[in-house]
Image (cartoon, rainbow, N blue to C red; front, side):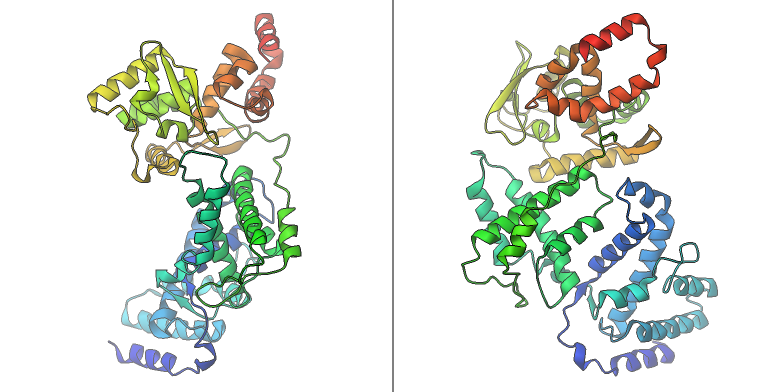
Length: 469
C-alpha cells in the first residue's frame, strides 16, 4: 500500500474512539435508505401527492447523493472501523484520502470535486442538507457492513411471539402467509425505530407519524397497510404489558406506557383525496405490447387479470381441481375469506387454462402458477420485472404519471365491465362486499374519461351510460 494511505490509516485508528466503543452500529444500507427518504421528503416540500414523480424527476441527483454517501461510509469502515467521532473531522480525513487518490491517478480532480459537492448542500437545492449535516443531525456514531445489524430486531423473541399471537387471533381457518407479512412490516418499523433512537427504544405516536411520513412516496393504501399492522402490534403489546418487559438483543426495552400505546391505536388511516383517481385502466396499445412480449406464464397472468379481474392471491392459489371445464366455472380463494367463491369463466380463458395444464402436466391439486416463495408478492415482482423489461412501468393520464402493476389488470377488467354489464354485475364479478366498494375504487377513472367527452356523446351512448351507472 502507498505510504501516504498507510499514514492516513494509522492516524484514523489512533483517534480517541473510547467514548464510542459501545455505540450501536448502523447497518450501512439502512443509513443510505434513510438519507434517500430524507432527500425525497425535502424535495417534495412535505407534500404527500405523488412523491414517486419527485423520485423520477430527481433520479440522477438521488443516485449521486446515495453513491457519494456510500463511498464516505465505506471509507469510515476501512480506515476508522466504522466510527464517526465527528462527521466534519471524519470528512476532512476523507478529503485528504481522496486527494492522495488523485495524486496517485486513481481519481480525477473532477471526481474529487463531485465527492465534495454533495457533503454540505446542493447548488440547485440549497435547502437540502448534504450528508455531513444530515449525519450530524441523526447522531450517527458508527456504521457497519455486517448484515446481522439489520437482523437485530427481526430475531427478537417479541416478534416471534407477535407472529404466534396473529395466528391465534386470525379469523381465517385456512393457512395463510399474512402473519409473516405483518411481522415483516412491523420488523421494518422496529428497525427504523432502533436506528432513530439508538439507546432509548420507545414507540410513540410521534415516531409512528414520522415513519409514515418517511414512506409518503408510497400509495395511500400501502401507508394504511403499514399503519394497520403497527397498530395491531401495539394491540398485541398492550395485551401483554403485564408480562415481563421484553428486551431486544442489545438490552433495549420497549416503551411500557399504555397511554401512549392507546394513542397510537387511535390514529386514523390516511384518506385519498376525493377527487383523486387511484385505479387506472391500461390502454389498449399497452395491452397489445404486453401480449406480444409475454411468455406462456405471463400471458396466462395477463388473461386471468383482463378477463376475470383476479387478484394475484386468487391466481396463485388456482389449481386444476378448482376448474370445471365442462361448465366453464371456477372456484376461487378470495382475499380474507375462509370459503371459496364460484364464478363463471370466459370460454376462451377456460380453453387457455386447459391447454396450459395439459402441456405442463400439472397435477390436480398443484398450483397452476407456481412461484418461488409461493406468495403473491413473488408473482407481483415477476410481473413488475416483465413490465420494466418491456418499458411499460407507467402510463400518462389525467395530467399525471400512474404506475402500472399486476393489479392494474384488475382495474382494466372493472373499467371495461362497467360499460358492458353495469356497476352491480361488475361488483359481483369482482367479489366485492358491496357496490359502494366498486364505485369508490373503480368508477372514478371511467367517470373522468366520460367527462372529457361528455358533450360529444351520442344519445345512445348517454342512454347506455344512464342505464349502467
